[in-house]
Length: 191
Image 1 (spheres, one colour):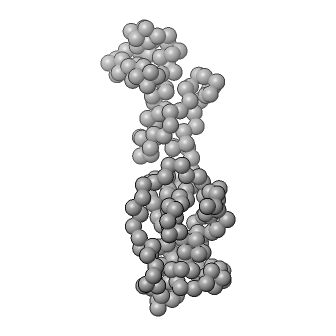
Image 2 (cartoon, helix red, strand yellow):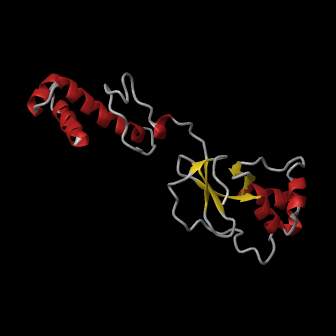
Image 3 (cartoon, one colour):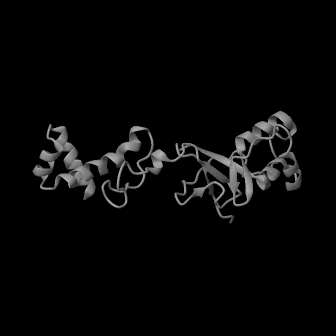
């Protein structure tokens, strides 16, 4: 209802009516017309910056948003706070950025299987110079971008560039839909 009323206020104002005249024409108070106008404007604002709209914002002039523009997570949250998603199969995890990009990430165990080494040896390698920086955590395990790991392997261990034959998830495309019930990096419970 707020959305349709806000849309009606905006359309009336685009026809040249003032906010007060639009409110009178629609049979609502000027304060209500102002709130509905800003409700729609706040909700659509992220789209002007190429971001998703997200949930409906709190309405201005109410207890939820007493003054100023409300905080809009899709617009005001840091741009590159990644989210790690567990796929539930083959230790394949995905890092999803707010701008929609998705990348495969591997924990130490997945890197060990990719390289055909023990987890302890991979843990030792993670402390060597030139090893890629972790992009986050899955539970308590650090994780690295799979492309960064492959690049490191190609440069430092070219004999492992093709990986073990029994490695079904190496190079596997992301074929599962994004799980919207994700949590920020470092807070995802281990499964």
